[in-house]
Length: 138
Image (cartoon, rainbow, N blue to C red; front, side, top):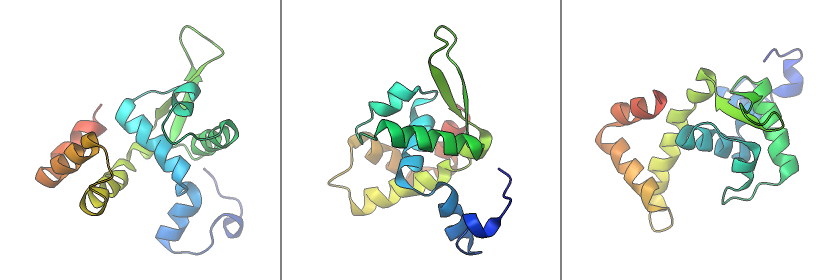
């Protein structure tokens, strides 16, 4: 994404703040999470997630992530009214960040998180690089 006027997009020159200005809202990270874990998704797939994102917000975030080149949108092979969303390599590069959220949640929110997330966190603890590679090469 080309930035014409950085002052309008970024609040500061801090790398954390700047990254959060681009993709740091919870919905964008959950969209990226779904694309990593489940692969290609449709608008309906995202809409059916447990977090219950509104259609307007989902549409906004998908457009934003597409403009940022974190995902791509293409027509479904059998239904031209449906779009398929896929992560780009730029989007997939966010996966290690999301994996760290899973590890943190397993440590501090263990009683609350789902069993598959706990298993994934354990895999990360045992072999972080191997686990990340497995997902990133899907």
